[in-house]
Length: 500
Ligand SMILES: [Ca+2]
Image 1 (cartoon, rainbow, N blue to C red):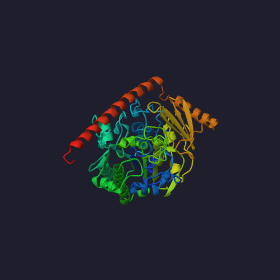
Image 2: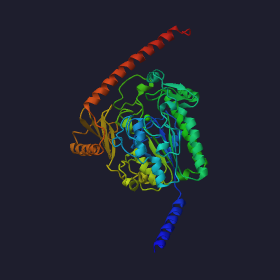
Image 3: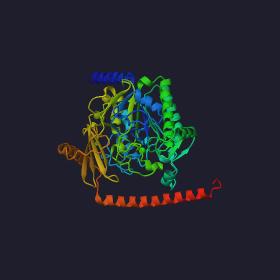
Image 4: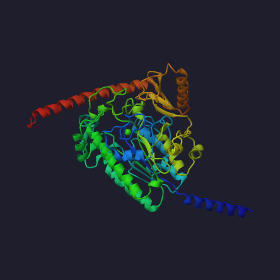
């Protein structure tokens, strides 16, 4: 009897293993730009918002990808800055649960089931690579969290940023330069295509995360692109021509990857996601005159959204978000809000796993839910522990936000005040409905505050806030003085030039 049970179990496992082997899994490519605002491609990010794209730019590959797939008009980065977003994606959690709202954090991804490990758990055949920017202070290398191949724990300097002492001043004084491989885009493209070819040849499903260094400052472009946009004339928004040139160079790299996927005949079994780690930079960083873009301004690189990178207004966290692949209708939309911390469970489901079951017996819950149904149908509800999306940054910009349906609350910790916006009517977040809709406000605020308590999120304190503000004031003053000094030196040098 015992022997027959064993035999039965053996045969069952064998059959199951053969069945798993027989199922073909899709490849997943996630192309992830750095510092790219919601409207900063030529493809509209909302069908009713003509300003949600910038036709001056030239992004034919991204435009094609958007048109061939589904655009998520309310796609969000989990944080308004690089590292916290990258941490969130890796473990499928909000910055509140990771206690990692800033660059520096004690959060150790090695204690969690990370994205490539979860994919392999869903199907061990998945081979995973991470190329490009990993992030600063991630507290783990790509290999330590399950990647088979990577460029190591890379950050901005590897993407050709000047890491010298005068870094930020150099950027403000000289926002751009020409270079053969701007932001290493073409090297990353080559690496990615080589990886895709090898996996296709080996007939194994793969996950490729291509974390581009573009469009983070410093701005760089090929000479040909830089000249093209100089000739094209003044951009319609407050960014320099070299920003547009860099964008086209980045897009060219993405186009080569799309072509490779077509050439290898794997387009019908490959999902290609595109998004960015936070919203667009403010124009000041591009060396342009300071005028307030805190409220939506048609000249702002992020218009029609309010503000920019660093903040929890839409300009800081709402980003381009689209996906193409098997079963996804061309030129389709989804208006249900999604965040990149949904990607981990989504990828697990695409790989044949059950994300909720996979994480059910673990100590720490994940916040994301699979968006597979939304990808395929454009409609549905994402199952997350809290309905909606939570953003938390209690230091520096001292705010938390909660998006639920069309509504968003924005809590300002220093002011101890909560604002309420209906994003379906007021995407620019200028019309505070908190006094008109007190019940809605109270209900959303309760959900947000309960969640923050439940996950033991980092807290705002007056002492810490005062300390940070004093530091920022000192640094800002120092920087302004040094910029002034540098500009004077430049003007003197020009006067003395024999060319004059
Ligand atoms: Ca970034």
